[in-house]
Image (cartoon, rainbow, N blue to C red):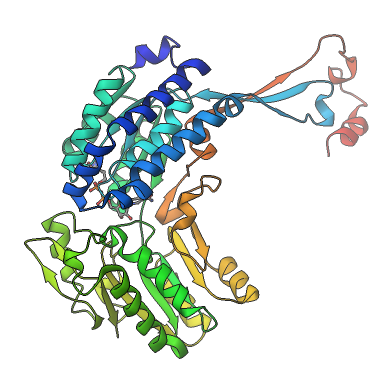
Length: 448
Ligand code: NAD
């Protein structure tokens, strides 16, 4: 791969564009097997697959194909007084051979969306799919091997704990882009640091959702339910818990129940719209949360089908594990608050959430929340949809990750910004050369 990259083949606009088109056609061609595999791994309907996986990826590809030429142009920037009459530009240079590591919850989209940026920016890439979504990994392997030289894009599957150190400790990647848990993120960061490899870490955490007393309760409930229980709650930007103003808690509970009933019916296990838990390990972890509060809705489980009903918990102690760990499943604790200080104190226990949502109809309240909470990205009167707008950078901060991507930001993540100044030779005043004695006043005027 290193040789392939150094041959310079990946650099031209024509090559990059062709590969993006090839990938787009491949995703189209493999749409059915991909949807079947996503159903096998996570019981996703074709509609859900389209919105969150195949269609999402195609939209990223279309945007990259449309804008690639413009993104690749060197960016002309102004030159300061000291350097006049030079000109200055920022060139976008490919990084080299990059490693992209994906998780199991959106096993196609979270592995190949970063790849769109890597290809657009002219890199070679090793992509590591998650071993916990084996059906999808197997289709991705076939799709990649049918379409790309292994020297250019190499698909690696298998156990991450073995395969990833085997790769990272024996080869200096030029960038590692990791999506997954914070615990594994730390392992990746450590391995990368050994070789001074730059990283993008897309991690998780507890993303709060605040519902203020002046929120439009029915709309808030529908939007929270849609995001929280999509993919059976196994979504990095799902509202982890809801901080609800005590005065409207009962109304919100009623509206949440109504929305759950309307979306998934009386028996969500039979619903076309409701997914399953990925595996037994996650299932066991999640059902332990069910008795850590009062169940006000849901609570039924079926181990055979890896089914956990959309569940709302009330009276949850803040020191219960369900309020300590990232839930990453269909369990939604409600924490009532009287004052925003109380709510902020809960949020502060889990610094830098990946996402933050506030439901309110007051602009001042909205502004206050957005300024007071330090989060990766989020929404006002909505939940999770910010990540579907490729004009917005997607990523966390601190504990929830470092770096961002989507749209142009993906291209930039996989490009080095090379600064270049060009100075004409026809103008070369002696003033800037030694002897300097007596020039201090002039220097002070120019450099200040
Ligand atoms: P996972 O277990 O599939 O792990 C992710 C990747 O890390 C896999 O490819 C796996 O092979 C590899 N891996 C596992 N153990 C490893 C080890 N010891 N050393 C090196 N590599 C290893 O997925 P996960 O971590 O359970 O994913 C869920 C987490 O990911 C949640 O915390 C969620 O919030 C987060 N997430 C974040 C985003 C985001 O965009 N920020 C998106 C999805 C998921």
